[in-house]
Image 1 (tube, each protein chain N blue to C red):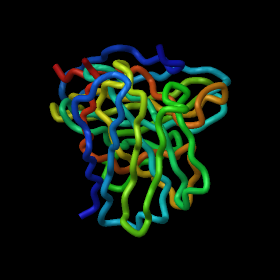
Image 2 (tube, chains in turn brown, blue):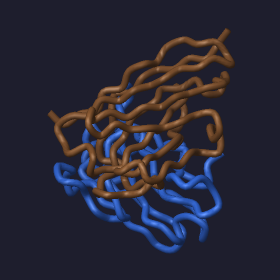
Image 3 (tube, rainbow over the protein chains, first blue to last red):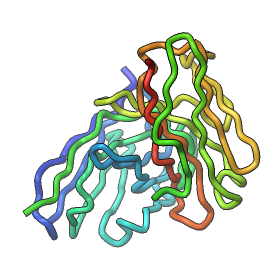
Length: 124
Length: 111
């Protein structure tokens, strides 16, 4: 089955760290750029970060640059988001998404596959 | 506040047609392709339209997209109750982060 499954979310105090993971299956993972998109409950979508198919380029939204790090392991078909120095405004549902076109860069294409998301709550 | 402006809500009766607008500028829609996503409450977004007017396989032709200048439009014909959802446009803005920017979303109510 073609799917993305996120994990690693939870409740964390401001200033602490959390690592999200995304397991891919059903498609040739290493052919596609991957991204993280987040959504505050009841609000809109915000692109967070993208990584090219071969990890050659990685990009971040200004709101997370310097605090979040994206990586991928093509052998394990997995995507990760290391989130440090978390803030209350990082509270959101985090989605793992896949580019529609193969061999894309870090800026993204249309996202044709989404996971169900993992919830991150930053609160003391 | 997004650089892409969508109406907060639209509504229409079953069987009717509805359009959702997405207004931008020469820095975003005027220069880049637009995608549209449907998000049924409690579920993940789903890609409806890419490259302004292209449908992924499995998306019915009741859904169509268009772009003109600095605006884009999603049209849905033959409305069904299952179309009730939030709809988001997306593109890239040359002034902002390298990734796509999303519109604020439009809630479609099927009366």
